[in-house]
Length: 159
Image 1 (tube, one colour):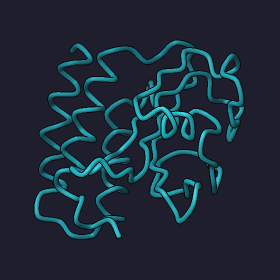
Image 2 (spheres, rainbow, N blue to C red):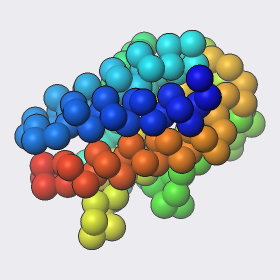
Image 3 (spheres, rainbow, N blue to C red):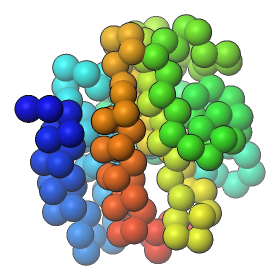
C-alpha cells in the first residue's frame, strides 16, 4: 500500500473518531494514537503542541516517549512552523538550526500548523521519526488534509 493509500484509509478512520465528539483533549489523544498506530515503523513520536497565552506552545496529547513541556515561538521545528505559518519537513534534525532535542532518537521531523477558519493559530501536529529523511510530500499532503478535517470539526472546542 502506498503512503497516499495509507492516508486515505487513515482519514476515513479519523473522520469516524472525531465526528460529533466534543472532548477536544480526547479527540487529539485519539488522533495522535491513530497516526502512531498507522505508521508504527515510521512514526516514533506523534503529538500536539497547543498555543498557550503568550508566545509559547504547550505539550498536548501525544504518543511516544516523554516530551518537552513548552516550546517558544520561533524556536525548534514546532516554533519555526508557527512563525512561518506552513508545514516544515526536516530531513535531518541535526542540521536544523535551533532544533530542540526532546529525544536523541529523533532523526527527522514534520510539523503541521493548525489554524481555524478565521486563520487563528491553535497549535501544531508534530511527528518525529528515528529514520533520516523519512517524510515527503505525501506525508505533507496527507497530514495537512487530516489537520484540515480536524480543525473543521473542532475549531469551536478551542478556548
